[in-house]
Length: 281
Image 1 (tube, one colour):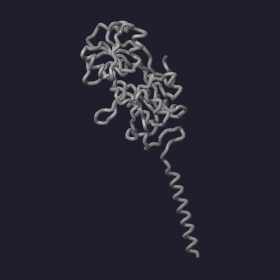
Image 2 (cartoon, helix red, strand yellow):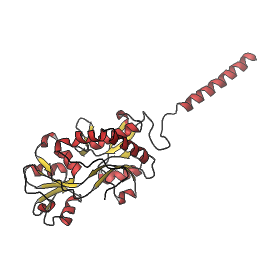
Image 3 (cartoon, helix red, strand yellow):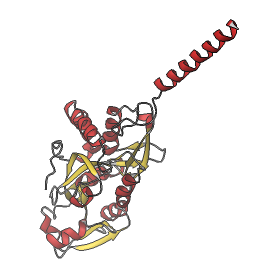
Image 4 (cartoon, rainbow, N blue to C red):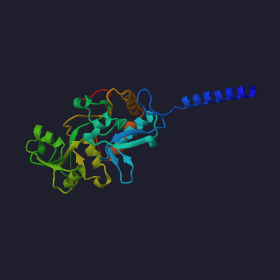
């Protein structure tokens, strides 16, 4: 009977050993703060159609300031670039994507507003942008916002930017709504319209594209303050972790490098990196 007892004891020890190994190798899932473990996928929402901000290129790559910020943040959360799954975050879908848990965080020219803050939390801000206009480089007739009176002013259908100008600044501006910013740029280049308005960061991203180099310039009018934040689920501990990552990005010079890389060709006069937690009204 002794050999059988030894066999049972050995088997029991083996089971206990395997159980311990299984518990100790549980590297998957998320941490208590909701941060995906290193080596695991993390899903990040960005814009796919904004050059300089967030753009999916024809060869399937992703470029832009928001992409660089998100990649840096993901690295600080323990993820290599290859761990990131990029998901398109259209403006109208951003809160829904976060609330459903379809993404871990969103960096998509996402302005922090009281209404949005009721639905999601924001880390940051990481960029202070302003509503501005893009005009032809050789156009000296628009030097201040009021000069937009009697000018053909373009923005995308459904945007409030052009309407804000007409309501608050230049009531006689002739609004032209196109399906996308690229159509406005074509109209601007062909002198069908006189100016395009939206956030200066978005305008700078378009103007910095090789095909538009030297053709356009920013007005520098600063008609509003747009505090770009990184959206997370309401109550998520990711907010604090992302804030720490953003502070490090500014401190080590990576933030400035990303600004120059994505907006430099447009001579974008960006604001200094904003203070985390301070939203400029």
